[in-house]
Length: 120
Image (cartoon, rainbow, N blue to C red):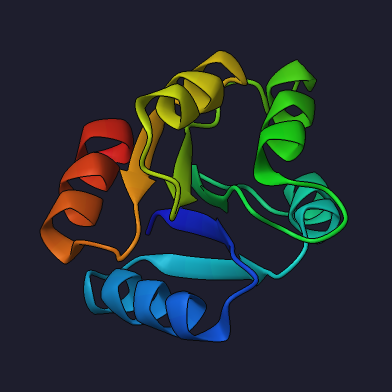
């Protein structure tokens, strides 16, 4: 079973993503804050990360840079989840190390296709 870490501070978005992933048979780890998500990576094997960009304390781009700089975490695909849909936002996410970019509201088919492309 593949494990996906979801870092999301909006409870409605978290519940939606969790339901979609669990319905598809994924194990879901959850973090509300980026620092908690990074901490979870030290204790759990994760196949992919869905990272909200607008988070309190540390944003998702900063967290992605930390994850991609880590020897044991650099190869984990990170997909940005964001309400920001401007092309410059996408470019900023990719340059921070994100492997993909999904906009909110979340499109279930697009989410599952992105996951399939990154973790099989």
